[in-house]
Length: 396
Image (cartoon, rainbow, N blue to C red; front, side):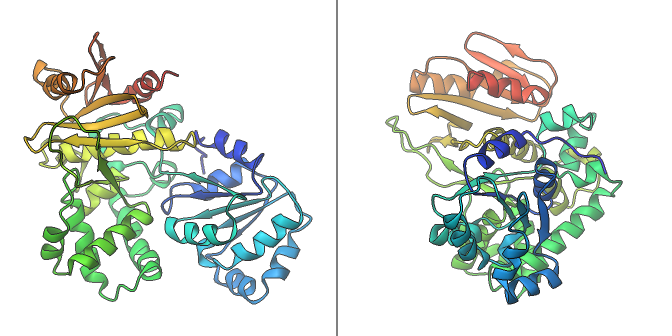
C-alpha cells in the first residue's frame, strides 16, 4: 500500500526530541497509525483496538510496559480504549527521562485531554492530524483532476491508496464511527436518531448553528443537541468556526458556524451520489467552504500551531467568510467562492471589511478556478494554490 508523505512528520519528529510522550490525535482513518509507524520504524507497535491485547493490558499494565522497557520506543494506537495507561506512563517517564519513547494515538480528543490534565501535564506534546491536505495529494500525484471530483472523494487517505468505492467506504466509515465512538463517548441509546441528527448537521454546513432549530428537526432536546455537537467536534467529524469579536462599533453575530472536516463524508451524508451532481448542487458553496476552512486549519495544525481562524458577520448582513488572525494587530480577510470565474462583485465584502477596519495589506479570495490574480488591495488564489496564499499571509 502506497504511503503518502505527511507534512506533519517533521513537527512530530521535533516534538519527540523534546517530550517523553507525544500524542497524535485526529479522526478515525486520518492516517495516525501510518504516520507514527513510518516516522518511527524501529518502535514497537500495539493497537488497543485488538481485544486480546486490550484485555491483557488491562489485566497487567505493569507487565505490559515491562515487555517494552528495553525497546527503542513504543507506539500505542487508539489509547483511549485503555485510558488508565496514562497514570502508569506518568510513573515511567518520571523515573527515567526518555524523549519520544512513547508515541500514542487517539481518535477522541476530549478523552485524551481529560486524562492528560490529570496525569501527564508538562510531560506530553499534542499533535492533531486531520485527513490529507491539497499539497500532500499534489506531491503524491494523487489529486483528482477537477474540484468536483476532489470534493466528492474527500481527503481521507484510504480511498486514495486502495481501490475503494467512495460511497461504500464512507457508509462503512459512518457505521463504524456510530457503532464504536458514539456508544463509547456518550450514552446514545437511539442510534437511528443520532444518524438522522448527523445528516441534519450536514444540511446545515456553512450556516450559523441554531441549536433550538436543530433540536426541533431532530426531535431531541436542545441540551441533547449541544451534547451531540460537542461529541462530533471531539471526534473531529465537524468543526465550529467562532465569530470574530473585535469591536468595530457594529453589532455582530455571536453564533458559531458549522463545518465538516471532510467534504467526502459531507457529500455522503447529503446523499450526493456522484461528482457530477456538484456542478449544480444547492450545497456546492457550503461544501467548497468546508474544504477551504478545513485546509487552512490543516496548514496550521501540521506546523503545530493554532489555526486562529474566525468568521465575521454583523446584524446588517455584512460578512467575511474567514478572518485569519496572525497576531493581535494583524488580521487577513479571506472570502471563499465556489465559482470558477472572477468577477468584480466577488470583492464587495472585502471592500466593506477594508472600509470598516482600515486594515493595511491585501485581502484574499480563494475560488474554484485555476488562475491567480494578485492585485494591490485584493489577491485571488485558485484552490490549487491555497498553500501559496497561506505562505503569503504568514509571510513564509
